[in-house]
Image 1 (tube, helix red, strand yellow):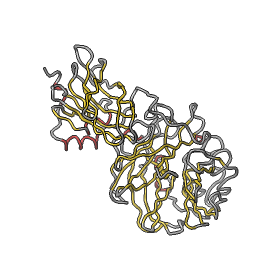
Image 2 (cartoon, helix red, strand yellow):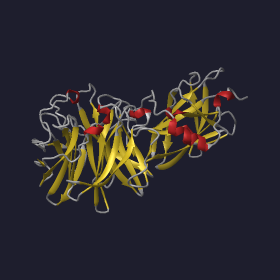
Image 3 (tube, helix red, strand yellow):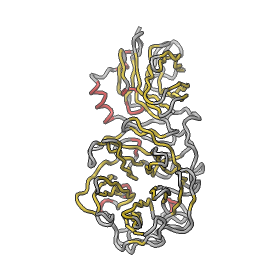
Image 4 (cartoon, one colour):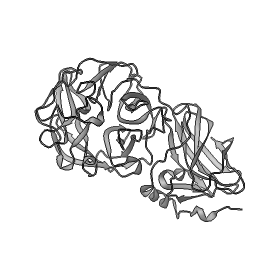
Length: 460
């Protein structure tokens, strides 16, 4: 017997499923939690938002958005875990173009709109800082430059702004990328201030980092539901032959802020966004609230790390976190964060995908898992062998009681995944433990008791 086959509405082909992803809704947060899906705790447990990290010799230098009466806070570390916040201000004065008295109350007490520093070396004793501040002339945020002879400054500002585009809402969140002897600046036009689109831009700069040159390219703008009305905080990293553009999105002031990424085989794109965010409040089971403002750096052990901020429990300051960053090809995987795999991207036989615009993750689900030879097989990647929590987003509308699927992990039977009755299109989460090997694994669902559909799985 095949229950409710009409509701499955099989797609015509795998191409149709792929097309659905372009238009479908984004991530819907899961309801279950697990001690496995947590960050290791802040490495700077005080206000240190929008962190940027640079290595000089054996020392890492971190710089952050203004707070505590300082335009740019800074800290040092030798391992990216233990940090010493330094006294003084890395940028004691702003450029003549900037208004040092402008107030931005949503950023917290003492916030005067000096945001998101980026620091890089142009020589052994030559360092450049890009920073965001409030432009006197236009009344919008713009990006300035400053120079110093040591990483801790004091950085001396230039008199004119480097990027100032009031016609598109202003410019914020500068970051740097270099390859083949060329340096580039990335930034966001601050269109959400004025009901305009927010684009992430790329443009080459001079060798000293103080002048823009060549053509400007728009890379991505807000387009997915989980992004809200904006994308910002670009960070570009190259993994093999793939460019990975990390970015933050949604409202910074609460737990809806997220980090995600897009990929391209060419520096100037086009870039393809990930179907689901990389880091969310839910992905860390609420232990990090609003993860964003990320930067990527290689640690002393040669492993990549992602450094980012998240709100404390009562949303009074944004602390800095440092988590290991692993890779599945060009797909980034953050230690301690749930990794989402959409059911429509799995390999499935004697089952079918259908559109589901009522809260399903990415808007497509897989059903019709009704036969003895039905299979939905996910290929998942974990950096280390061990026990992991498997979260299954499902809907069970069976009339005959609870449903379930058989589970096979790497070709070995692993019991069942059981689903309480929810009703169709009421997506809930069940969880259980699975043992995975380092690297690539397969997790296969087959016909069990009664009937259920799968929306997505998370691994943590």
